[in-house]
Image 1 (cartoon, rainbow, N blue to C red):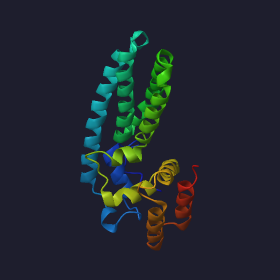
Image 2: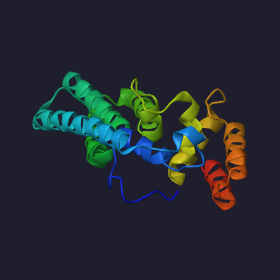
Image 3: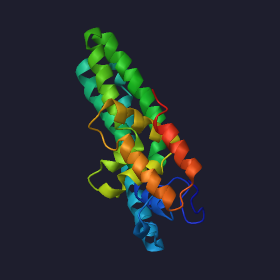
Length: 216
């Protein structure tokens, strides 16, 4: 998707990013395609405050990690949960917070290894917990599930279809493995067919469907 490049931040947070998705985008209803400068300014301010608060959490984490090697299992477990929560928070906040995820995941792996060494019998439980957390790290899903999400229920499909192919592939994989999950492939096809009738590029629509079914 090609967006207007003059008005958007280089790495927009959750609220600005959703306005960016909607702006002039045939995938969205006509009344959602026009975005005002005032709305952009307000979204940027909300994102800025979130980034500031998130950075405070990251700074607080640094002091906790200094003695992690000497921690007991009872101390490491809540620290690991905090790390996973921070990763999920980053996905929901978007923007610069996303850049923190790789380092946090490295710390997460280290703590999991530490716990596995201390209690090998818990390895399967830790793997399940990480697997569940992985779904919450997809920015589209994390931002959609926020209590204050800017993504209306009627915008969930066009929002997904405006994301990169890797995200579309991941959500397609989840949809195929969880029959009750929405959207389904039928939802995707129906929305794309309507968008193409309104002028959306047919080749892009085909590539989106290909991405949806790509991950096995």
